[in-house]
Amino acid sequence: MDSDRIYNMLFSKVFSLLIAKAEKKGRTREEVLTVTSWLTGYSTDAIESTLSTELTYGDFFRKAPAPNTKRTLITGNVCGVRVETVKDPLMREIRYLDKLVDELAKGKPLHKILRGYAD
Image (cartoon, rainbow, N blue to C red; front, side, top):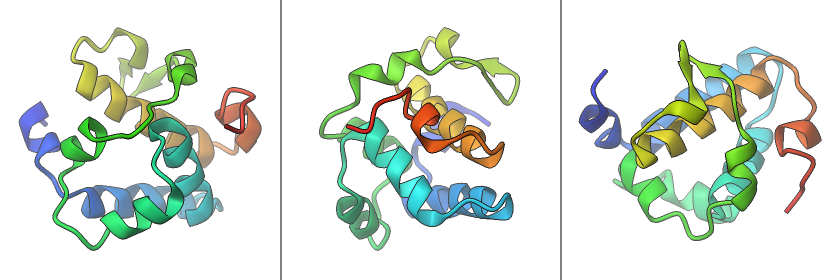
């Protein structure tokens, strides 16, 4: 899938898929909201309110109010791609969230997913 297509998808559509992936493995919507909030700096209420808008996935990340400085500690493979080697900064942010949800789905404890930080 090309980058522009991903960037132009509705945030609400992609986010519902991320939630479904986590819930299928016994995790909760609240946990997905928590990791997304931790990564981007959006409050969980702000994330919830964007779900009823036409905000694109790319713009969700472009407008992130306070990307977590600890996000660079997120490493590993997502869909066969090493997150830390993704050249496009916007795509790297998207892959960070993919990786966090993957870790949720694999049963990793939330405090470890947040790299030991709850802020």
